[in-house]
Length: 359
Image (cartoon, one colour):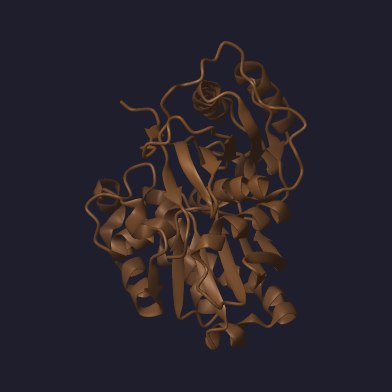
C-alpha cells in the first residue's frame, strides 16, 4: 500500500529548489505537506495524511490515551521519514491543535514524539489556528471580495473567522472557537445513527455560541447582501462537495473551490443523513473511518448556514497546512537555521503539482 502521495514535477529536476515543510496535527488526523515556492503560490512536492484520532476519548478525562498516542506517533514517524528524504528543508513548522491544547498530559506526549521521531511540535492557540486557516484559503477568494468568513471544522474545535481582504492579503477582524468538533461531538452522542434530538442539540448550541460573535461584528446583513464570501474547510465540507458532485471516487481538483448554494447544501446534507451508518461506511468518499464524524460535521455546517443567511459556501480542500506554507514563504525573516536530517540522501527526482490562482 502506498504510504504517501507524490506528484509530477513537470521537468524541473535540475532547478534549485527551496523546500518548505508543514505538519498539522489535529484531533482527528495528521497531515504533512512539502512544497516549494513559485512566483504566484507554491508547488506541492509531497503530501501525507492519516486519520489517527489523537483526541479519541479526550472528553472523558482531558487526556490523550496511550493507544491514540501510539497511532499518532506511527504516523509522525512516516512524516519524519518523508521530510528526511527532502533534506535540507529551508523552513519548517509543525503544529498541534485542539487535542493537544486540551490534554493534561500533552507535554509528556510531545516529549515522546520528540524522542521517537525527532520532530518538535508547537501547540498553537485557537487564534493562531484561525489565522492560518484564513491564509490557507486565500487562493479561493473571489475577485473583488472585501471580506471573508471562514469556518474550519476540526476534530476537537471549530474555528469561525471573519477577515478583511486587501491587496491579496487578509487580516482577521474577529474569530470564535467553538469548543467542539467532529470527534468530540461524535463521542458525546455515540449512537451509530445520531438522533434528531442530538443533531438539533448541536445546532442549537452552535447558534447560542455564535450570538455574541454576530452582535459584535454584525455579519448577517453583509452575508445576506453578498458582501462576505463564506468558505468552509474540513473533511466534512469536502465530503459534502463530493456528495454534491456524485463522485464515485474523491477528486480534490473537482472539490477544491466548488461553490454550493444553500438549497444544494440542504439536499446534500439530507442525502448523507438518509444513507444511514452502513451507507456512509460504504460510500467511496466517506468510508468507515469518517461515517460517524461526517454526521457530526453536518450538524455544525447546518448550524452555521442556518444561523446566518448563507446563500452559498465555497468548499476548501486546504487549510492550516497551506496557511503555514504561505505564511513561511511570505515571511521576510530568514530561517535561523536550515533543517537537516542525518543520514538522509536528497532525492534526485521530486514531484510537484501547482496550487495557485483563483477557482
